[in-house]
View 1 (tube, helix red, strand yellow):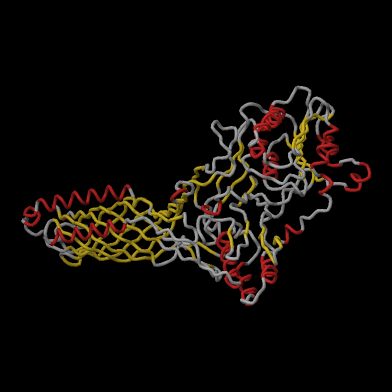
View 2 (cartoon, each protein chain N blue to C red; view 1 turned 90 degrees about the horizontal axis):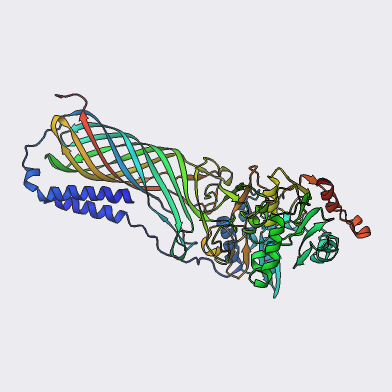
Length: 373
Length: 261
């Protein structure tokens, strides 16, 4: 009988040891006071910022420096200034804190983002591309829609300008389907008279990551590993999963083998950078222009991102919203270009004076020189 | 988990056999266990977890994950007829699995299978001087983390709009991955891996004394790491410590090194 009792207890203990579930617990630990908001911000960043290990900021030293500067008498404006100093050296160029001080909405961004305020980019707005650039394209080949412009230059070179990667968003209206179907067809199956392609991603603010393949896939004859991404799975700063290869795929309905120039500048951002970097891996592609913005890591997976992704956006008790990348993207060469930007193969700074005085676009001209005559 | 269930069933079968045959198990004359060294092997299944606090992320949990204790060496010394000093040398896996749950089940799954060289040492005491006897055991172990392998699933970043049935407005599209663990890959976070682990273990099971001094055993041990898997190289304020907790279902046999001792 002793054996029977012993084994029963033993089996019971063993079975209990295999209980798997953790209780569901809500996040609710900080008060809506200046000190509570400071702690929530520091803690949230510590847990949810995806670039620890790459970022030069010593987040613990930041805590030590600022913890005594916040009291429960600290005003929102003072707290905003403190946060602004705390995030000064972050490398995530998608990073922003949306705040409201005295009823006024404001943004807090890292120093690198503040430096991006180039003074010429207003010259290359949608109006320029839809009027001046559109007029330059051969009649009968050209089309435009919401800043998207494509057609042929001198009936010899394909030109495609993409202002942002929101094609699927535009397709919510079925009336836009024809324009985008024709644009993809134009890219994927070039007419025989064309000798090269200019893909103009200047002033492209990025958008939907799936559209990286939608555009770059027209220039691929096989799938291509374009880099790796790393995700967080826990709250400690080292709790990253492995680097996971990121691939793009060819368009099964066409392949454009022509030499390509990708035009980019300091406002080629996010998904536009990912397209630029992906295409730069192809031998027939030359990247011309300026170093890109430096915000390649994806900032959101969608509306439920903060529910399930371990890195990325979070809210403070006072309602301020911290927006940061949900992954870290490393390019196929093994380097991280976040905060730095991706350099062009052929550096051609935009000549503002030339543009203002003559209307000439020196970056476009250089692209045309590079393509076969 | 599946492995453990199988071993549990085997264990249960052994119990049923034991319960059904009380006279047979008690009746044989006591087998005197010879004093001295014994050698043999053991193998088993490991059910492991690294406990994590997900209080700030309600849709995540850690989970137990199954691995193996590969066949390894057992060296025992019979101190008395029913008392053994036990030493082992084996390679075993300690898995770590975190995943998203509820409505986000199967979106994220990070499983890291760590492989350790394991050196347990302890004492086993058989409760009865019978051919078939329950035993209890316990002790300490040292382990060295040899390698690691990631498997799992994450949300896909670059979708393929050229795929058939592609739906951009579908919220969740995942991609599976498999990759080796890179040691010190995260050392610049101020956190480093501790590849040496020390811990305690204890449990029990059934042993069977056969002919020629043969001793077979089957049992379960709970093991707990006393050292942390990661440690900080600087004073990180929010650092959460991680330890291994495992259940090992184990079977093995030993024979006397020298007969007629």
